[in-house]
Length: 283
View 1 (tube, one colour):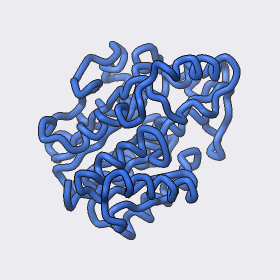
View 2 (cartoon, one colour):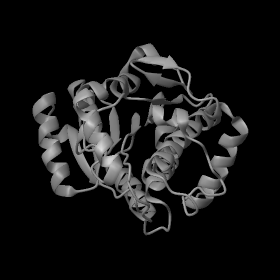
View 3 (cartoon, helix red, strand yellow):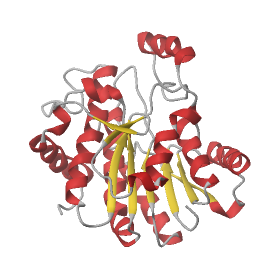
C-alpha cells in the first residue's frame, strides 16, 4: 500500500481506527475523517504508535456526517491537499434509540449511516477514477438482511424504531454498493460492502432504553475492533480481490446478502431519491 492514499470515515475509535492502523501498517497514507478534532488527534497518535507509520503519513480531517455541508467541506479540503485517492472506506455509523433530525431535516440514522456516505463517494468519484485501480469499501451490517426500504417513510416520520431505522440504513448501503458497482463497470474502481461482525466499540453509545441494554448484553460476546476491521482492511488492500466488485463480504468471504438487496429497480429508485436528497446532479 506504499504510495497509496486512503480515507476512513469514523476513524477516531472502533473499527475505523483499526482499519486506519491496518492500512498505515502496510505503508499507506491514511486520512482519518473524524467528527471531533481532539478525539481525532488522540486516535491519530494511537494509529501512529500501533502501526509504526511516519507522522506525515497519518492525517486528520474533520467531518460531521449529520451535515451535508460538512461532507462537502471535507471533500473540498481533501482535494486541496491530495491529488489521488486509492481507497475510500465508508465506515462511520450509529444507532439511535429515539428519532432525531439533522440540520438538513433528515432522520439522523439514515443520513449518517447512508446518505452522507453516498454524497461523499459521489463528490470524490472523479479522484477515485483518476487513481484507478482504486477501491470503495462500504461498512454495512447483517442488520441489512432484515432491513426494508420504506420509500413512503424513509425518514421515519410515521413509524420510527431504532432497529428498523438501522436496518433500513444498512440495506441502503448494500443497494448503493450494487448500483454503484454497475455504474462503475470498466472504470477500474471497485466497490464492495462488508459485515464486520458484532464488534465491541462506541457504535451504540447514543442509544437509550431497551436498545442500550441489548448492546451492553452483547458486549462480552463481541469481536475486538481490530478483528472487526480485518475484512475492511482485506477489501481495501488484498490482491485477492483485485477487480472484484459488487459483492457483500464477511470474514473475507463473499456471501449472499438479502433478497431485497438484489432488486435493481429498488436500487435505481434509491439512487434517484438519494441524488435529490443530497442535491447532486444525475450522472
